[in-house]
Image (cartoon, rainbow, N blue to C red; front, side, top):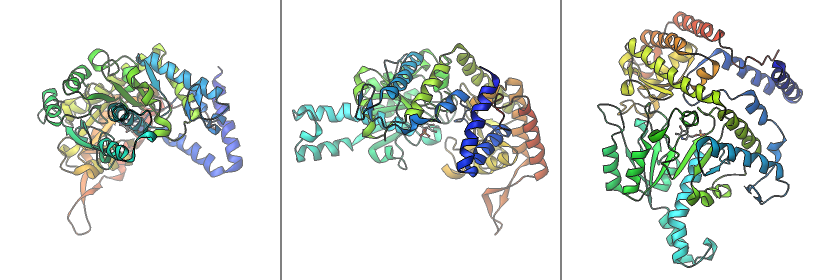
Length: 478
Ligand code: PLP
């Protein structure tokens, strides 16, 4: 393919958009410029390929396709069938799963599909059987009432938020917390690591229907074989949310006990984080849960997004290429180099390092809250996000942590030497930032003081660092 094909495609698209609403075309162009200039260390973000991006901008978006491949509630879905089947096939091959459901619009949606598939399998199906009917519509009012109460009275055990778990793993602000009676397992305060004996103890006491593993901010591997043994010992369904580290599973960096697919009953993921696909979600499972999973739409999902499923097929095909394994390994090498660079400069890291794509800084050692650190870094051209650390004294809003991750910078081509420079930039900003005060003189958890000249200097150094690694090098918009 000629290098110009990608530029031509995006330029033409912008021209077409500009003719209708120039401000949108301008914003799209500005977003590319901003992304090119910032040192993106958001652990959950990446840069999808031009092919993946282009696959989303077309008439597939217009098609309704409720149902599954070959079984649609709408006519004329033959081409949607093609892309959905391709995406599922690539996912199954890539992850070694027997079933893949590629319709979820996001990670949250994938988790909802999984929860309801498990509830349908473990609670609804036995109730139908007991009542000797095939369909919920055939239940008596009394049986339906009893089933609804039973569905709403199930238990989930997941990782606590401050240990790195995700809101969708049974926490009250999310629908999962309203659906399930939830308890959390944390990490060992001394090491920051999951203590499997404590998880087993919690499972024995609580007897959850679902044991969830997976995280947004835990910088270590999880032993899924042990977690499955714990689930089995209490009759729980073992679910893994690999949204963050799916790319490391796809790239065979996480294998054996650390690959969730052979150990979990059901695995959910996003497709846009380390997996580097379009924004979206996916569910993998064995034959036992496949039928229930396939009912995700209309159970909890709106109509499938064919353009995004097509883009998932493209991104998954990319992830099956040998160079993706190299990419996945470089993500981890870079995260470890960044962690080592920070440790050498005296930064406190949760668990003292990383085995995956993310590093969690405890910025209280700099005398800052996560919010102050996040904003000071942003002023200096370094994009991160604040995050709670275990036993966080500043709560979930201000936090004491900064989460950084390497999938995006690794896609740009930065390597371990650049990670050391990045560590230096981060350390300089944090060590030169001081907490600010409120108008009445009391200490503020949000305000901070950073000399603008320092912020500008670091911003310039960040831009210089990125200059050798252009983002989307084949694309010029002007
Ligand atoms: N699960 C985990 C572990 C996540 O980290 C996230 C997002 O950050 C999600 C689910 C939700 O993904 P989405 O934003 O696509 O709904």
